[in-house]
Amino acid sequence: MKDSSFNGQVGIVTGAAGGIGRAIAQAMAAAGARVVVSDVRPEEGKEVVKQIQSSGGEAHFVACDVSNPDEVGHLIQATLEHFGRLDILVNNAGISGGSSLAHELEVETWDRVMAVNLRGPFLCAKHAIPHLTAGSAIVNVASTYGLIGAPLAAAYCASKAGVVNLTRQLAVDYGSRGIRVNAICPGYVDTDMGGHRASLPAAQAAAANARREANAALQPIGRQAQALEIARVAVFLASEESSFMTGSIVTVDGGCTATFNYGK
Image 1 (cartoon, rainbow, N blue to C red):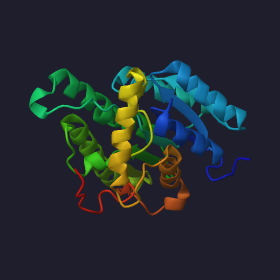
Image 2: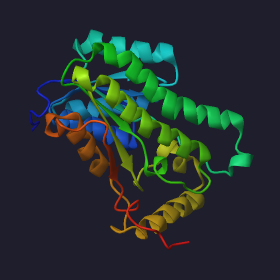
Image 3: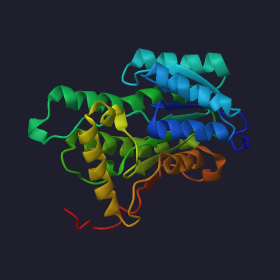
Image 4: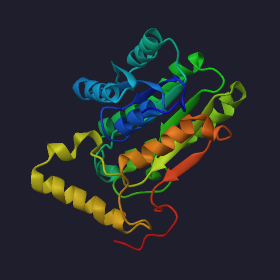
């Protein structure tokens, strides 16, 4: 049974066809929000809508590449046409950009990571804010990699650091309008960002996951998060339960940014 935390408010979740985004969309719907599921993968996105509806929630799918201004504009207008209002924006869509040293990183890869991970949240906020009223909330999904350096991730680290400070800046400009803007910085989460593992041979996919598990094991909590553990924080930040929070950068990382990691 749904609760009534959001009392029928309408929220958009980008990158909601899988992983953290799917978990956020499902958790918001379970808390009483009407949810627009958005992604570049229509089949997977529509499946998330069906899952929400089968649990008694309300959801609608809108395809959108968040790096494209026209598609973002369409996302906002389609939301207003379908549900009649917009109260919550969760900027979750993101890509990893692979692993390489900065001097070996293709410029095209850098540009694409910046376009999705940083330009995307900016465009979504730009188009959504004129329709948000007092009591509305924006939740940006950044990363611990936006707070610290990490191996072989120049573009990803830089893009997520941009999201962190974009969050603070938007909070400054729009707090007086009653629009709150906060960010989550997840650590190791048991998801397959961008379907990367799914595209690998089974042995390589298993090795990639084993590396993540080994790295997560070095953190204070000692494991990867489940996507729902991130989603619960997103729901909190989007709700009135966090009414005095804006410009906050919330780590949900099992303690990995709280300690010097002696692992190799």
